Length: 207
Ligand code: HEM
Image (cartoon, rainbow, N blue to C red; front, side, top):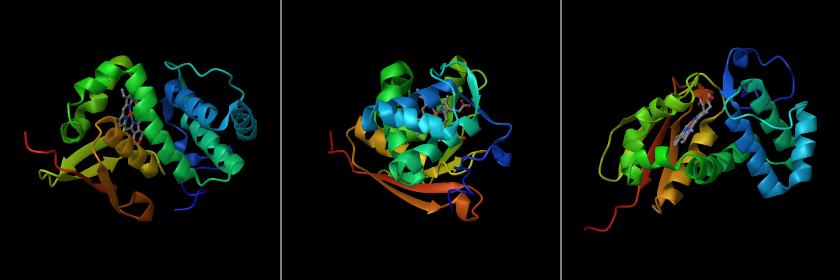
């Protein structure tokens, strides 16, 4: 999939994203990641290039998806890094910083081990909806569950976010100190009905 087809461009007419909105906590987290990793100056440059004139994103306010896509597109251009690479890094940041630091109780309720958390993932955003009632979350299902692997199905009305999911899974692996292997085996961007990932974790030593 090209950056264009995923919607990461700076034009104003990203048709398929028109009706979707995201809570400001996403853009706020993106700002944090860019500022921490690349510095305040880079963030200012990204914001300007994206034509985003917002200094402070409010976590509980909704912003058009377009804002997030434009910021990612501008960051990709400013840093000379492909958007999927930035999205993957953002997924790791989201779990280890945004979610764990800001929503520790929610993350704790998701499970005590990586496999438990993944099996509970289909219900995760239901609890998030209690805090953010207008959430337009992705949908996950798990199939082919064995003791050390499962197939994660990811459904979204948004385009181009599979690398974000890969980063989230890597972040979860780190959070649970469990080595995780991820294979993206079906891609919506390549015409599949939805994205599928084979996620394998190392067996824990017997108790
Ligand atoms: C406490 C932790 C979490 C919170 C508060 C949270 C909240 C959110 C919010 C606010 C959005 C933007 C959508 C909107 O505003 O309508 C979002 C999107 C998303 N979340 Fe979560 N989330 C959390 C954890 C997770 C985890 C653990 C995963 C998966 C491993 C995940 C997967 C995603 C994905 C893939 C999207 C992109 C939207 C899409 O694909 O359509 N989230 N989440």
